[in-house]
Amino acid sequence: MRSSARRHETVGLTRSGEERRHPHRGRRFRADAAGWDVVAVREGWRGLVEPIFEDLGPAQVSGILPRGGTIIGTSRTNPFKLEAVDKVLQNFSDRGLDALVAIGGEDTLGVAARLYAEHQLPVVGVPKTIDNDLSGTDYTFGFDTAVSIATEAIDRLHTTAESHNRVMVVEVMGRHTGWIAVMSGIAGGADVILVPEIPLDFEEVAEAIRKRHAHGKNFSIVVVSEGCELPGLADAEERDQFGHVILSKRGVGDALGREIEQRTGYETRVTVLGHVQRGGSPTARDRLLATRFGLKAADLALGGEFGQMAALQGDDVVAVPLAEATAELKVVPREWYDVARAFFG
Image 1 (cartoon, helix red, strand yellow):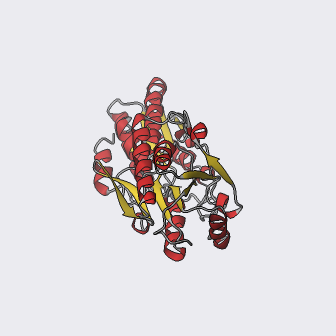
Image 2 (cartoon, rainbow, N blue to C red; image 1 turned 45 degrees about the vertical axis):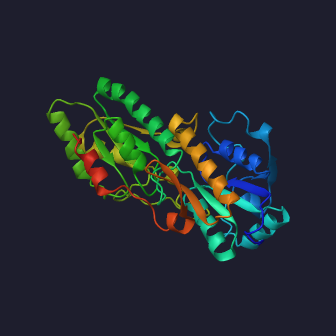
Image 3 (cartoon, helix red, strand yellow; image 1 turned 90 degrees about the vertical axis):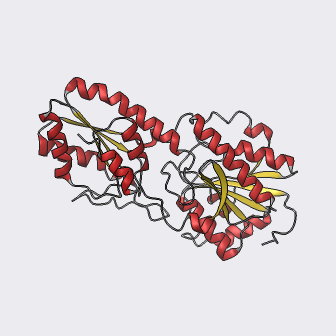
């Protein structure tokens, strides 16, 4: 690797994991002002393994602010799993990159942290995950949009649940943490909220629904994170390169719906929001946060402050070590769940 003390001229931009709106605009402005060239490393870490590069200029990033998804592609490639770290380092050098900005969640930034710590790759991170589970930052961009989409879905399901006297189970994303479930459930007025952090008790859920019916409330909304552990529900065998179970094949919502119907006798329907939470136009808050993160990441790269991640703490965008941000997940604290539980029934 070249010394970080030299003046950098070319910065690579990559992202992995789920798709969500990215802060190319802010980074493009800072890079142009500093006289840098910006190169897209396409398809996440795969783009440094194969390699797949594309120059990014004003024409490529114009008009992307209201768009969801990503213009540079994404993948779930893990160079450590593929034993392809040497390829990453060689392709980084061959392309003439002086710095890399990695956008993603725990897996993407976990790879970035290891590449920096073990191989001195000059990389900075931007926290992007709808799960909002990265430590060191109050919020990740993509989360607010996902919560807004889930809340709107819950709002819509209220009317059909009430009209047909049904229990509606809404399965939302959240592999290890229940931030989307808690936030959207509270905002949408859910009657029961279930998250991976708190062990699930089928009978407690059924009893909460029975009590509602006993008080003349003949419908219920139950929000459940896809990563919840249900008694008797085995994990799907298919996994990605980071070793994660493909959650869309577990069927948490369907299993919970069947259990509720069997225990209560009330007609139950299940809605799995799935990837609709990742698509569409981002909220204003996510657009602003992504832009601020992009500007901070550009400043870190320009200043040679590698091994850092842009983070939101209070109202300030600051730098935190990648190693710290990826050391452990930011789980939903008990007090947040207690707020949600206060409205059960």
